[in-house]
Image (cartoon, rainbow, N blue to C red; front, top):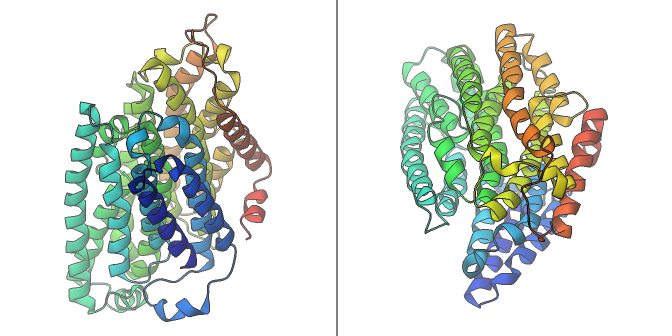
Length: 459
């Protein structure tokens, strides 16, 4: 909980820097606060917060997912100077909103109570509704904001309705007491209906089909750095919250929801990868890519072992690194070309080889090519799921094979054109180069030595 308080206070300071017309320092305030929070996340929780354990418990798993979320947010903050250069008048609000959303994510990592779950989801979501519409003069950004808000409110209704059914049947919001009730009363109709409603609500938050309809429009209409935040930090928060909810609270009725979840995964993997092939815009392609990865990550619920939580964390971190790597390239191209079509990337490797390289390696990692972190992440989840859902693994492998086609289209555009279309003297900043080197090294090192992940995060 100390980490949560530090991130919250950092958000407050960043927000008020704008009030005092010092918004240009908001990014540095955020980076400084996140570094302190990351340091504290390696320390044991304070005894002072023990009395709140029935609502929020800072366990080893909570600490693990908190660390990878903070690292991902830090990388995005480093990219913010260039990405938000046209938002100078309200930079402080953007950085503060990202930190507030991170607070919601951290809350989801340790919730012990359905009330805490609801608060975490809303604290995570509400800043995103605002950030999606930051480009006020862009109709696509306005559409993204209102569509995300309306669909999010609809999903919140499902979540609250589900919580009401759970409370009505169990008489408690406590996750472990709910688990005990489900184990003892596996045929309670009201309880099972509540479980399915909450599953649908959380499926919306992680963009699982058929609850993904908002994702392509919101991702493509939002500012690119915010899209990267949604595709990485929000995905981490939503999936671990879903994992914790279903494997602890609703473990007693797994047989009632696991088949429904499997159907979601099949629809997700086929639909997202097929739609990804049809895209001509790189940003929209990455939106469908994010949906497809929700399908791969969902395999963690099948054939579960003692390493399932670790496998989930590794995959989410590998995917988040790749997302930041691709989006840092997309942000730079979008600034110069005012578009994100595949054609806008033609010849990028000629003018900015490092930027093109980090994007290419990130895309290969997303595709699950060997010697990348993405391959090890997929291998661990697919191997686990083979014990309980071999058919789903086959569908996931087919989906991965399809995804290679649309990832390669972007790589071909960057590397296989003789002439560069980037006729500009503007060069990538030193900060971008440092982040690019870090991501390239991390993806390759984790692909070759996956145990480094456990060592670096204190496991």
